[in-house]
Image (cartoon, rainbow, N blue to C red; front, side, top):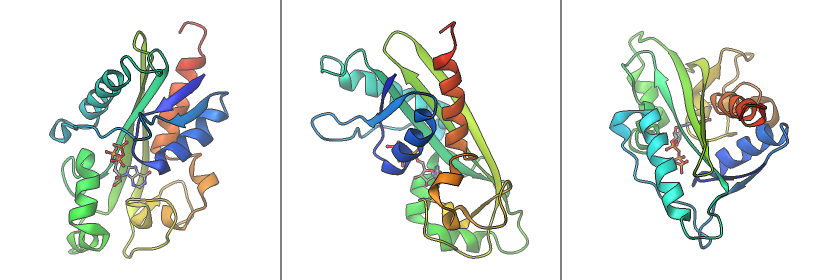
Length: 197
Ligand code: ITT
């Protein structure tokens, strides 16, 4: 199936392509008149609500265009720190911009818990049928910023299923076996490929 991924984040498109192409799907970034969508996100309501708002806006955006009827995908994701309740979660991109990775590390001094997890909610819809899934990747926050791979919080996130390196120190291929996004996309692929869909 050709899946148009409505996102402004090329890193998400790359990872989704790696995972979904293994299940026989083709992922392309949705560009309407050459521009990726700019969604209004009700971040205070959490990842599920934001993903739901994104798919509604994406379907609205392609209404009456050549893309109407295509399978559209959206994804909302974030990092959740055990030391805080439900934070930064859906506000991860704002917190990354406003506080930064170094600022966040400073907030975790004084023996605060360092456990954390990435979560993702992914939705595909062709305007008639909708499929959704979630994925989680557990890990902990490093003491220092390490590595330049990936994006966002990757230079301070050490996945439990790794060898102690941050995702910022991982190569792209390997990471897409265990990330929250890969897990959500793999579940979506199962749903899309199931005979009862
Ligand atoms: P779209 O909304 O256009 O899809 P975005 O990058 O703004 O793109 P989100 O609103 O879902 O996406 O915000 C996700 C943020 O969560 C992202 O900017 C990072 O700060 C963090 N994040 C999520 N997944 C991540 C990952 O795999 N690696 C590093 N940081 C991640």
